[in-house]
Length: 72
Image 1 (spheres, rainbow, N blue to C red):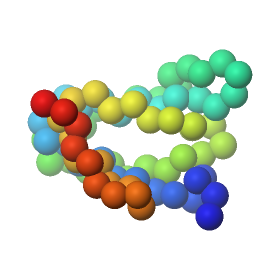
Image 2 (cartoon, helix red, strand yellow):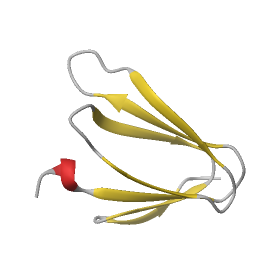
Image 3 (cartoon, one colour):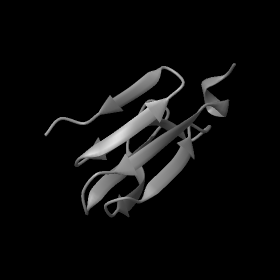
Protein backbone atom coordinates (compact mmCIF):
# COMPACT_ATOMS: atom_id res chain seq x y z
CA UNK A 1 0.00 0.00 0.00
CA UNK A 2 1.31 3.46 -0.90
CA UNK A 3 1.68 5.90 1.97
CA UNK A 4 -0.49 8.29 -0.09
CA UNK A 5 -3.48 6.04 0.70
CA UNK A 6 -2.77 5.87 4.41
CA UNK A 7 -5.05 7.84 6.73
CA UNK A 8 -4.19 9.02 10.22
CA UNK A 9 -6.32 10.54 12.97
CA UNK A 10 -5.41 13.40 15.28
CA UNK A 11 -7.57 14.15 18.34
CA UNK A 12 -6.82 17.33 20.29
CA UNK A 13 -6.49 16.89 24.06
CA UNK A 14 -6.33 20.66 24.63
CA UNK A 15 -7.35 23.85 22.84
CA UNK A 16 -5.00 25.23 20.22
CA UNK A 17 -3.32 22.08 18.90
CA UNK A 18 -1.49 22.96 15.65
CA UNK A 19 -1.33 20.47 12.77
CA UNK A 20 1.18 21.56 10.13
CA UNK A 21 1.64 19.91 6.72
CA UNK A 22 5.12 19.84 5.19
CA UNK A 23 5.82 19.62 1.45
CA UNK A 24 7.64 16.96 -0.54
CA UNK A 25 10.67 17.64 -2.70
CA UNK A 26 14.16 19.03 -2.34
CA UNK A 27 12.87 22.06 -0.41
CA UNK A 28 10.72 21.09 2.59
CA UNK A 29 8.29 23.89 3.50
CA UNK A 30 5.14 24.44 5.50
CA UNK A 31 2.15 24.39 3.15
CA UNK A 32 -0.93 24.01 5.33
CA UNK A 33 -1.89 24.37 8.98
CA UNK A 34 -4.97 23.74 11.07
CA UNK A 35 -5.74 24.58 14.66
CA UNK A 36 -7.82 22.07 16.65
CA UNK A 37 -9.64 22.68 19.92
CA UNK A 38 -10.05 20.11 22.70
CA UNK A 39 -12.06 17.12 21.50
CA UNK A 40 -11.85 18.01 17.81
CA UNK A 41 -10.73 15.25 15.47
CA UNK A 42 -8.94 15.61 12.15
CA UNK A 43 -8.67 12.74 9.67
CA UNK A 44 -5.85 13.30 7.18
CA UNK A 45 -3.66 11.48 4.68
CA UNK A 46 -0.33 11.93 2.99
CA UNK A 47 -0.57 13.22 -0.58
CA UNK A 48 1.66 13.98 -3.53
CA UNK A 49 2.25 17.38 -1.88
CA UNK A 50 2.42 16.38 1.81
CA UNK A 51 5.32 14.25 2.99
CA UNK A 52 5.21 14.96 6.74
CA UNK A 53 2.97 16.40 9.43
CA UNK A 54 4.11 18.27 12.53
CA UNK A 55 1.79 18.34 15.55
CA UNK A 56 2.27 20.95 18.26
CA UNK A 57 0.25 20.58 21.49
CA UNK A 58 -1.34 17.73 23.42
CA UNK A 59 -2.94 15.27 21.03
CA UNK A 60 -3.68 11.60 20.42
CA UNK A 61 -2.47 10.30 17.05
CA UNK A 62 -3.72 7.06 15.52
CA UNK A 63 -2.12 5.44 12.47
CA UNK A 64 -2.00 1.96 10.99
CA UNK A 65 1.30 1.62 12.88
CA UNK A 66 -0.28 2.27 16.28
CA UNK A 67 -1.50 4.97 18.64
CA UNK A 68 0.66 7.58 20.34
CA UNK A 69 0.32 10.64 22.55
CA UNK A 70 2.35 13.78 22.26
CA UNK A 71 4.45 14.48 25.36
CA UNK A 72 3.22 16.83 28.07
